Amino acid sequence: MQGRVDKSNPIGRVKCVVNTCQYYESGDRCVASAIEIQGPNARNTDNTDCATFSPRH
Image (cartoon, rainbow, N blue to C red; front, side):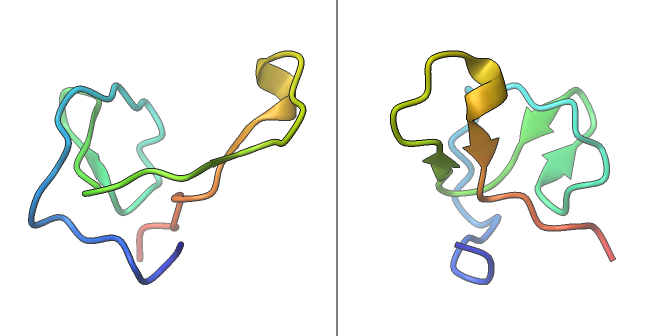
């Protein structure tokens, strides 16, 4: 998903505390327009992954 997500239309209701991500905004907000969560057959949060994460440059 990296490269396909932009900040022009943030979904606004997603809390994110990963301040090293390019979609992080102060106040613990995710400003990506879409989020992709991976982890087929996950049984707990340790089995999931935010594929939208992209390191801040």
